[in-house]
Image (cartoon, rainbow, N blue to C red; front, side, top):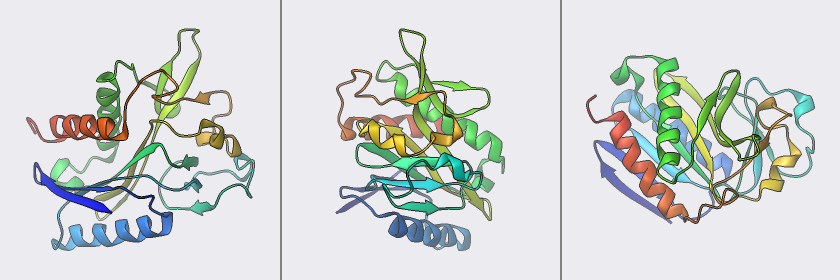
Length: 218
């Protein structure tokens, strides 16, 4: 099932069932074309995938450690290998950058800030790290782990793909890849950090912080 609403001039869709990757990619392609020709509004799509790996344009063969474990999808977004699966909130952002200064680098920074601001609402300090994509947290013992991935593609100044936040996925599923090509650091999730929250709680925070970051004062 899919719930659709309109808020702050954007269309928001939330899928309650797992969405296979081919279906999601085809839907993104269609929406990007619709935004470009003016027939459809900008869209934020909240979903979860069944377990799978994606390989971005910079993915290295040696970083796929277990090719037989889950389906592997080679895609056009930037970045390397990532995992998607149940318990991970994926938000695909199909937005017109011409309305936002046509600055891809700044858009990525804004996505990072959106994730960081959202994590802060749960008392989690998310941080950027130079040379390491995504959002990271530092544990009490000083160890750093990745909690969110970010990867986009842009066509005709329309963005697609987006962000993925680990809410309560099976973290062992990440062991079949070197996430984003970074072998020396692990991954974590909100539940792994002791945060008691539902996917609905996360969605509510993401929507509120998105409106603040991308519309208020813009």
